[in-house]
Image (cartoon, rainbow, N blue to C red; front, side):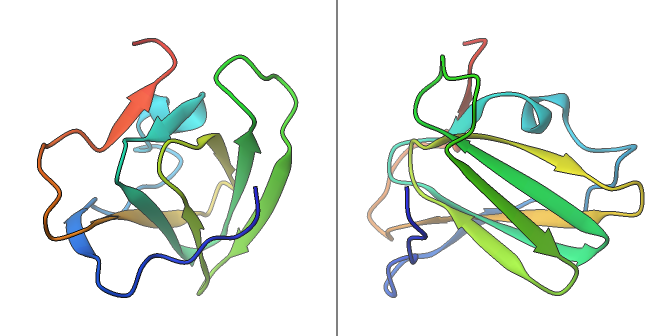
Length: 113
C-alpha cells in the first residue's frame, strides 16, 4: 500500500472526539479496516501514534509502518486492514471521509466481526 490521497470532492462524514491512551477504543488497537467507500484521516495533536498496515485480516506482519507525530496526520484508504499504537502522551482523533453520495452509517470493520 502506498500513501493515498482523499479525493478532493469527498467530505467529512463524521469525526471522533479526541482519544488518549486511557480512552482509545480497543478496536483501534487491533486489526480493523475502514468500510467500503470510507477514508480514515488520523490527526495527532500531541505525542505520537504509530499506524501499522496489513495486507489482509489474517496478516500478522505489517507491510506498512507510519509514525505520526504531533501536528501531523496520515490517511487510511477504504477497506485497508490496520491497527495503531500510541505513546502515553498521545492525543488524536479520526475524521471519516466519504463521497457525498455515500449511503450507510458503517465506518469501519473489526476482525472480530
